[in-house]
Length: 373
Image (cartoon, rainbow, N blue to C red; front, side):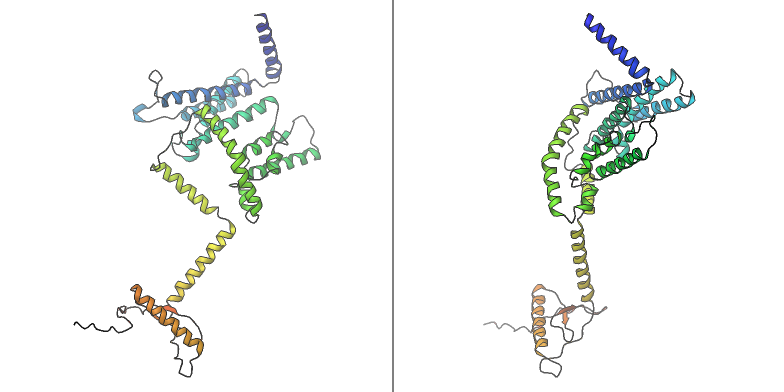
């Protein structure tokens, strides 16, 4: 009992010294409200999802489902407007900080709904809400422990060396974000040096950096894909397990569900937009060749002279034989087209009949009538 009393007294003394005396009590209450509101609302929605009888359900006045982010917006407005209305004086700023933290937890818990403008709370897209909440809690905790953006301390004098460090750290954080290292890049803004890890390592294959820099480097792209399969897949499994523990597992949407079709269409559009440069050029070349063939098919060609005539030659005779072969294949396929070859061209080009004329359906070779015996 005496040991517990001593630990409680030391905890209170530390709170007075590091929180109250350092004028961080409003920020501390904001963090407490943030965490408590998120934990409480997640517990509530999981009870509602489990259809527990003793737990109250959703708030649906008149059949309208009111999401809890609506109440979160109310807490945000009360906290934000109240600080300006009272000029940040004590003890109002402490209560308004708590109110603002509660609003942050309620609103960011439905961040995915705001982002997608769709009720994806229990879908795979709903995991973005957990990302936003964890990131918000980490940033608030870093501010509470003394970290400030880019490592700038307000009491220090501005020097060119400090400005250079801030600029370099900001650029490295941007590179880490472009490489798909979201957590490393964002936390590197608060903790200088952390973003260097994400900037030095290989980019993720789906990141903008990989699309820009790895398109002409197949070896590096293969390394990135191999690392994605080995390392990031394990990290994603651990992250999925942690998020399932915190926020609950997402619903398994059937394959015929409309949401599945929407997600599949978005993924297909994204994959089409992310084609490599050489694949896009090859596709453009194939389209151009196909367009040339279609445009050349409608152009009239001059007939080739016979081999025995003054304008005939051996190459033209070969072209005529190819033309006869094309005729025979056309007749077998049931199509009716006429073919002509330009003078001096050893090949046959299909020629469409002129507009307004009916296609001929007669065979080019006369049929031998059968004689009944």
